[in-house]
Image (tube, one colour):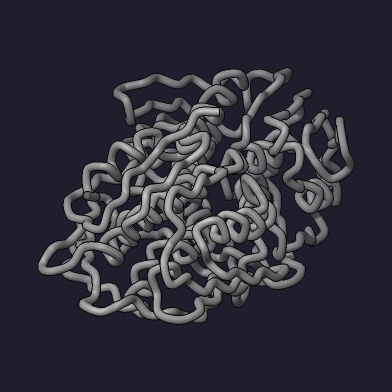
Length: 434
């Protein structure tokens, strides 16, 4: 296994430009493909996940033209994929697998969807159950409730409310929301249980509105409705992908940990006006003592406090991915940090609660984990030369790079897993730390 050794560091300073948001990139690609008209997408993320979506759309017959490394022209198919027979391999890209499952279930074709072994361990039963309520013909080709899937033509009936669980993954609701306009019928969704990761639903709704579809939203996302038959996607012409707010968290954290004595870290592509919920990470690290030096419409500048960071006790439903970065910052805080309402970590690229607990213990932390929470007490001194397993999870690799700022060398196994969202992450990280 490839391994990257990061030297001990204690100082952070400089400027980083973010790649595009994964969540926005893959949603935008699918909506552009389903829309009527031609869409030019600017600043699209270049990563494994977006590559899987682009490959899938090409196999489905969507016309794609690469204009530059991060710019694409997509000719929409007006809600009707030209290719009605396709075998799609989607790697470990949940932001491609879940929405495509729903869209293809309503597309009247024969499709198989598969991925890497970890994708076949990630539950999709709640989405399939919701789609079967309206007549979708979906079969499991392996274990019940998990990919791979076989989708066949079906008679779709959305006359009754569609019930879908909200407490496992917001991607299931996102997939259903994005697909329902393909029916060109009135439809209603009822969310069962508390909806987790609500900010990702806000991203979905924002992007759907940019493509001309405006679902009605019931209080606190308890339900959604498409009240008439006019809900069809129309290209907005040109659309820009925001910088990835989750990726911003690592550099913002670096500034909060180690940009002292008048220094700061500037993150370009991050904005407090972002449609991404993870941008609220800025306010949470402010509670820990981080100093917001300056912000504008496309950048945030962060510095460390004069004293130690402070531990926090936080409900993380509003920042599900960026909350992982808080777990590493807990190593540099005074006291025990508790991160709550993170059950969604269990069904991500790996079981992130278990993985985070295991790897934090390697650097000396005292960790207590529960079904939907983690408590972290930092050691008096970090353990040097820990070898961190990353579980083929890009965020584990990026998070644990920050440990080196505690003045200890650290080794990261399988560092190339960051290609999922940020292929040159370690090069950018090296530019700002010393």
